Image (cartoon, one colour):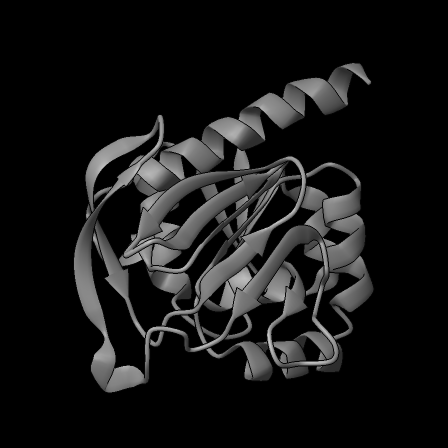
Amino acid sequence: MTKIGVLGLQGAVREHVRSVESCGAEAVVIKKKEQLDEIDGLILPGGESTTMRRLIDKYDFYEALQNFGKAGKPIFGTCAGLILLAKEIDGQSDAHLKLMNTTVKRNAFGRQRESFEAEIDIKGIADQFNAVFIRAPYILEVGEGVEILATYQDKIVLAQDRHYLACAFHPELTDDNRLTQHFIQMVEESKKELATS
């Protein structure tokens, strides 16, 4: 069975576990970097990106997460996870994991009270997907080879860069698992590729 890890340092961990299990994959809450060796793909959940980065450093996850991505294993970042994956963060001199060829803007849709839901179409994956935006970032620009999968009000809110997937909203907060299912398919494909390479 495909094993999907959910980084369990902060954020909507339980909801992602439920979503992964609803898709028929095994979910593992990742609390120690050694557990990364046991999984096929990883979800970086929403939360607070600055706090998450502090915890990543505190528990010595930084290099292990970078190596996980560089080994070709898929990573899915939602909301704060999108910020963690980005190569560049608008208005900041340094980014976090720098794995995904994107520039992001933090809290771009406003603060907590400006949280909202919107119906968006996700290219090749889902029409009329109910996206929950909470203090959401968005992707300002994408680099070469990055596919834009969804926009909202002309802002990029979902993109895929090779085996990295990142969205500005919280797919785990609804019962619509189509985006999680897409990530699991990415993981299954990468498993086959990594097994033959």
